[in-house]
Image 1 (cartoon, rainbow, N blue to C red):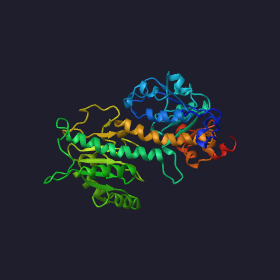
Image 2: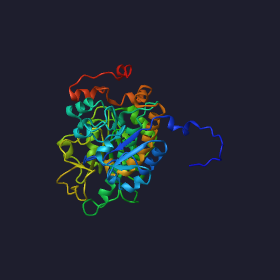
Image 3: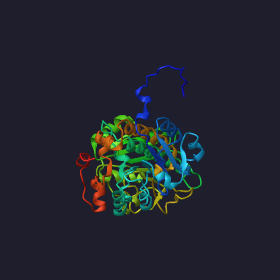
Image 4: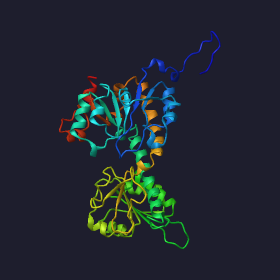
Length: 395
């Protein structure tokens, strides 16, 4: 802390008066969901938030998944506490849906920051949030002023990059894989990578594959989005519309297949899978991970072990949760976005104010003041959807 001479008058800057705002506590409970290895904050991010006036309470062992110890966090100002104490904070960050018994321990009216995970939602989960009066926000639905989704976009980019990195490692494995490189060797045909979709995840996957020397084919039903992606990637990517015959030919020759989100998500059955190469590496990094190839058994990369893949052709598998295979990278990327978001909450002096003055944040609210404000979640819970703008008038 800077020392000032006696009787010296120092006029504080706007950024130097956090004491005029309420000090918020942030809870980081350990995620016990085996399919979610990502963690929201690094020790460096915790240090920044503590310096800005937040109190950080982390459950002991919560960051083990990204290979950081409790001591790494405590040295940066975090308080290492029990699970119950971490759940009692003003703001709780837990990327997977909490268990019902954990929701019951949240402070009434607390803010829960999580990922949407529609496939993991249940009527019981939603009712528990409502009964506790929790303001729950799906961070992957948050939009900025330009319509971008900062959390969802960075997660998609990591998933795309990770899928190619992991696929390259699997192909190069001389014991469980084919023992081949993606490409870039004179006189040897490169591997072929087929990517369905042309969004952020698809572009990230394509860029990684091109960088490794692979031949990349990209398909999308949205020709405008496809044109934009090809312009960004340059002449080394080949693009085409999603005609069934064209997709079938691409699948038959592909060494790696990466499924990302498209407007009308396709499903490819056993007949299409049967045409694929022996030892093909298939990833589904779309929102509905694993459902694009319903006949293929899935391997969850958040819990995969060496040798789980079968490369002899007897069984083709689909890999999911590629981002969970690189959880520390995800933590670093998410930290930057969380810092900005949490600063906004302090600046606007409260969660309700932040939601009221941020249309992009409003779109991400799942439950608010004991009501379900997300239409998809309301349908799952068999409840009535309430427009959040109406609730904000009375908050």
